[in-house]
Image (cartoon, rainbow, N blue to C red):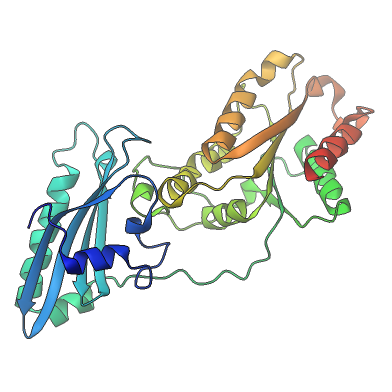
Length: 319
């Protein structure tokens, strides 16, 4: 049945009791979900519904459509597969719709042949376990690979200022973590989560909980270090989660940066990159402190008012 919304599928689409928010694209806020195909499969004394839906995210990304294929037994979701049009680059020999159609035909054939074996082999719909990690109000990224460098000093000043204001703080030393670079697969737009399971999972969880995000970074070849750029790129999964489930507002951000050479022009790329990063995940940039000429000065603690500037701007946004 194409383009037909039956009473069963209508009830399923509207139900919020059967499907968790983290797992269900049908409860997403942007774009309308439409049933493209629905089949009732009667086999071995059981009845299943195979439902293919499409959701247009063209308002965010031109031409992006998420296809979701779901098997229902009664009101229970037994299995689900998602794919979207952005996963398939120009030279790909297949399209998203062709892939989901092939999966639909495969599932139907397997269900009719041996539903018990099919359901046993399919990955179950998972619910994310509750997270008991304390919520950091202030999240500080120490983006320098040098653990005893000037960015570590700034991070410590920012941490002290936040703790003095009674805020809970978490400092993340990015070079201590294992984080795979983003591969631009766009699969995060199917579920709101990255396909890679590494230390980035905890970072995104911390970002989602924090109210204040602080980025401390040196200038490497006029931009941010590689480890910080990887984190920025992988935050596209958090952006995808907001596109699918609704954006989170009210977060504030600060940038602290140091450059070896003298001159504000050394920070031109840094400020643009970090500003784009914050705005992409709906963090409001509230200011920056840019300290140059560190090749000559050496230790940032030799700049008389550097620490006070950091503390002052921290206290200002934490009020």
